[in-house]
Length: 233
Image 1 (cartoon, rainbow, N blue to C red):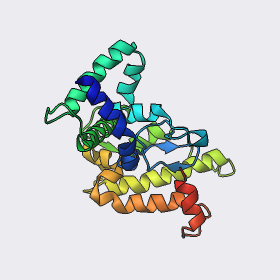
Image 2 (spheres, rainbow, N blue to C red):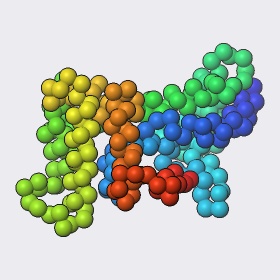
Image 3 (tube, one colour):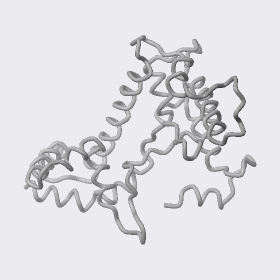
Image 4 (tube, helix red, strand yellow):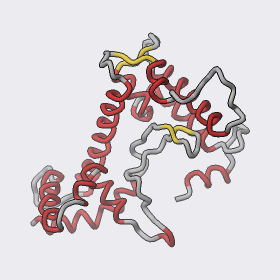
């Protein structure tokens, strides 16, 4: 029965992952692009490599979650099969002995939602060492951008200029996440700051940042070439 379920999983997993690629997002400073990343793929692996070769490691992480996938990599083939069988039993909610497309979709969404919650908890602890109920902007900025001297003009340094732009974007997003405008973020508001795609009141900032990321020439418009260049797989 477990073997049957595992085969069902493998047949539908690739299709579902394609559907769910844009389900969740991640918000972390990205020094390579100078922008805060909006899209959070289901895995840090590339889904398709050179010559459109399918990367099964992408499916592996999307199905298990990144942390669980790392644990699986350390197991023997026999141990992996045993643990995967237990996971399949969890996915099979109606216990009919097979995994449906909807059950698999719900499982992948569960693993990504778990990632978001774990990420919020981890970053809250990192930035809130005093374990207060709220976090202020200056504290967050000190932890994240402590290497930037705002009083010293180093705009001729591309890296410093890039990080200053990222800090300004963060500040704008921070202000939007601050629902009661008390200049402090609760843990819930901090979660909205890190993952704005999850909060209805953050939709405008997500749209603004997405447009800024795609608009490479900064003319305030998105050309077809810019759009294709952004989303080319």
